[in-house]
Length: 207
Picture 1 (cartoon, rainbow, N blue to C red):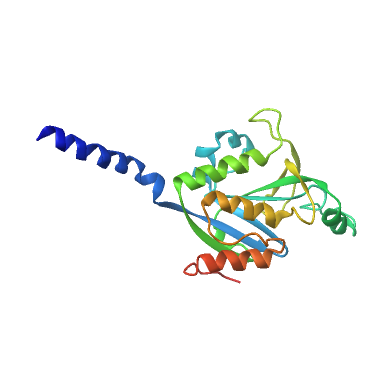
Picture 2 (picture 1 turned 135 degrees about the vertical axis):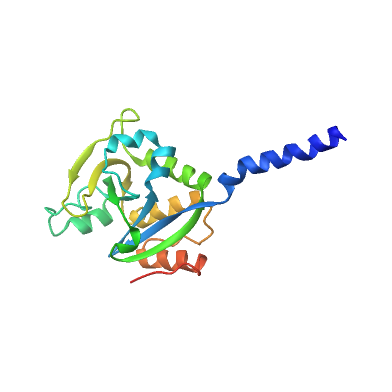
């Protein structure tokens, strides 16, 4: 009787151990503001999966927003009038925006919430951390800060252009959540958000 019991017990123990990794642990938020989209992640998962990002030295908050964009245009209030066109049609260097967020639901723009497992968030954070340009894991190159929401901008990997813009970046990271929305046509923020909303119809949005 003992041997069959052990045979049944082992799969049960394995299932219990894997349960936190395969059940929805938290919500990831997608924010759409103007022409831009960004991802908002619970801070505890950020530091747990990417401890090297503690070097960001952010104030203690519940969430952290990550966005990717053109190095000159994104978050730069001294940009010239043609900076937007240059960013679209000529490959340029890129930056990562990092902003401490207390409550995503109080942010401007359109907000969508995607339930995610601990493992999905872990995979997503590994990819987000890899977007930062660095010489070694803890060394991040801060380029500028703004007084708006305490936003910070860091040197990032990848070239920004019309066919690889901030919304493409967001769509590609959603795939690390095993997200099934069709994000192929994600050049425009509105198109991407419609596809995300269609895949999670029960999740409310606010204007």
